[in-house]
Length: 373
Image (tube, rainbow, N blue to C red; front, side, top):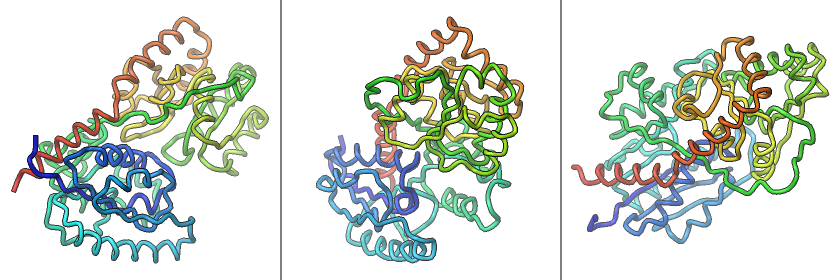
């Protein structure tokens, strides 16, 4: 056991940019466990942030803490808040004097930091699918700089590690894979909120998430939209393009777009006929684990990290092929014996992914890094 406390700091970057999301959830899981670890001297700087995760619960476990939740502001005012946070973080770090700095995104608010840097790379979507991002988006540039500057890089999957090595030329010994887990564990109580059988889609529907392929496949097959609704949870308002596709197939009345809390999502997973994950690329992909936890059969694209997560507990399809997706959709909702096998495999597979394991591995890397000169 270490004889001295490990001094560790997390910054504000993702919390000032993300109300909810996979990256801020990941850091919440790490920070919660770091706060409860006796030999960690934790400094947490959330800054003026819009994030809604409940970090206040960890405040008394931090040697240094600053965080003020603010409303979502217009972009001009957001930029001002970002500058204020960067300046305040420099002062905060001088007081905390940490040995380790785990930055929460790819910017560099501490360019002069003299300790050890830890960086998590969540995916390589900006590099592999640049067409989905504006020319003014600097994420890839900032990421490449942060990767070069980090002492160790945590990748969410072997797929992301491989992409890092291939795209940036990052040495493999600098990258460690730390798999993520499912945080959605509330009890799915009560009756089904959707009375008809339905297919479930969860999260953002934009660009590489490939939702429009699902929408077209659902519309193409009469047996699907006649016997099953399509339920979308999260992802914002229905867009004009989505409405146009739905109108073309006369399926608008068969689609529900819902938003809500964890209780709603748990209920939707528990009672869905199948969960569909058509993404072209994921650095990890937590929703399939959520579906497995609630006994929902998973139909997922066969790309990037997704097979690492789903394993043998789901059906796969080519996310570039409408016919393949439509065929697999019809299969997963009609073959009851196969569905039951997928459900049981999924329940067992989800148990292999643990936030405790993710943190224990990360903590071991922190300690190894802190012990080096």
